[in-house]
Image (cartoon, rainbow, N blue to C red):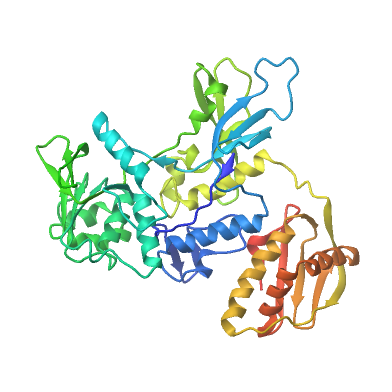
Length: 484
């Protein structure tokens, strides 16, 4: 139904690495299929920052020219075929929280991990946690007593952008972090960073490693920097949190399961995972019927074979549905053998899900359906271009990246019936080579009508001629492989 692109407020190092191989160049585990941008062009780090990943995702979405409605949550889906004598088209009615209504023939759930999950069963504890979550302002700069890891990182990032830290107020305080996964590790890393006091204490519940050596042995090396603080500033409790009790002084006492042990914290950070609640939107579609999901398969170039790319909703004793899931919402997709061959060996990594999600989209929407066609030819067609503004070296480098993104966005509306063509830009003119005269003039007219793009191209050409060679794949501009 919607693809989620995020803006990371709380910056941290991601755990999917850029793999360097001197024989083959840079092999990335963070490739976004059909994106004109690469993470290595944004970050030189072995483990890039979440801000870099956010920039890559946002640029990819923008370059796709697909309209995205942000800050809108779907609350109900209705199958209009139910009880209908004549089956209407579109089939589905989607209602949004703000009153907007959409109609669609297909729905694709690519809503990611979902909402923060609270696995605590004790009713009073759940009420306390959910109330604290509801009172947290993730756009603000104050931490609540109990915060989920996403909001914690967001609030720390908000304060950092104001030039402020938590160093003073975290002095001699105790922070309880719950859950041992990536979210918990990233929260612990942040607490150990210069944004917090060096004398704070961390109690890490559900972390089974009680020594630095055990932690390193059990953990991906990306997080090994944490290990030396285990047994010093970090106390670990191996069992899971089961009960939360508010104390008169405002602190929270957290009891662990299986042992008579508890932790008292000034702040508690929950990193207990997520739960995708998409199925709750389908209550009127599913009714009381039994629901399963069947795999959708397709050939994926990066894998070299037919594989699972998503799932399709299947309702017992009901007409066939056109409701699908992709990405994290559809895992597990990769087989054990496929995971073992991958670099990350992680079923929810971009390396394993990106190509599959792309293949799912292609399987659901076939063809190019464009009214604009650019054909192969050998004409050299130019138009004059007056230089716009001035630019320093840094602006030139940025504009070269932006020009590729903007040109990619423009090219999405064309069927490209050519092996490739070249766009040359200097301070005096734009030239298209490799298309028929009619096709080249169509493209140049679109370029000239976009003053923002002209400005970007002119700035990028300040360092000399800018030459973009655009290959084609299956009737579309292969923007991922545009070359300077």
